[in-house]
Image (cartoon, rainbow, N blue to C red; front, side, top):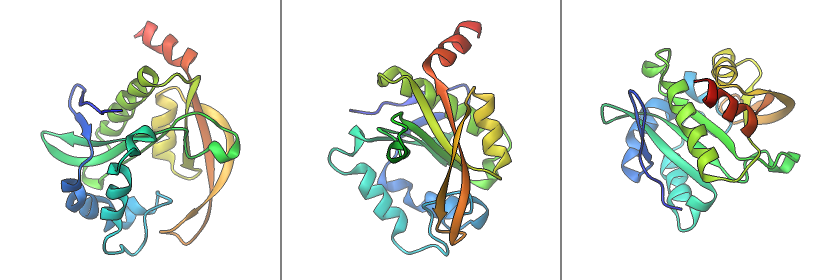
Amino acid sequence: MTLSRITTRRLVLRPIRMEDAAAMIELGGKDFEVARWMTSFPWPYEEGAVEGFLQSVLGEGAAANAAVFAITLGGIFIGLVSIEVPGELSGEGIDHPTIGYWLGRPFQGFGYGSEAAQAAVEWGFENHTCDAIAARVFEDNKASRGLLRKLGFKPFGKTQRYSRALDRKIDNVVVCLTRNDFDMQRAVA
C-alpha cells in the first residue's frame, strides 16, 4: 500500500521518512515527558533507536502492516500518528487496526493531536475493511484518554504493558471506535 499525504485544516500528514530521525529524537526520544507515555521509547535514549524504528517501518512490505505518518505543521515535523494492522492488540483477541500517536511537547495543547488522530482514523476506515479501530492508552494519561473520547472511542477493556521509559508494567485502557459510530458522527458533522 502506498501512503499518500493527508491534509487537514492546519496539518499535513505525510509518509514518515528517514530524514525525520533528528526531529523524532529531539521531540520524543530525548524528552522524558513524551517518552514516559510510550511503551516502546527507551529511556534514556539509546543511540540508533529511532533509525532502527524507521528502518522497520520503511522496510520492504512494512506498509502492509503499518501506515506511519509524520505530523507536520508548516512543513515542520511535530509528531507521529500510525494505523497498525492487524493491530498491536491482536494477541489479546482484538483484531482491529490500532491507532497510535505522539506529539512533541511544544506542540501539545493546541488540538493538533485531535486533528491528526481524526484524519488517521478517517484514513483507516477508508483503507481497511474493519468493524472498528482500537487504541491503548496508559490509564493515567488523561490528555490522551480525553482525545480518544472526543473522537468517539469507547472503553473496551484493560491490559498491562511494559513501559521501557518507566521500567515497569503500566495499566492501560483499551478503547474502540466502531465503524457504525464513526459513520454516525460523520453524518452529524
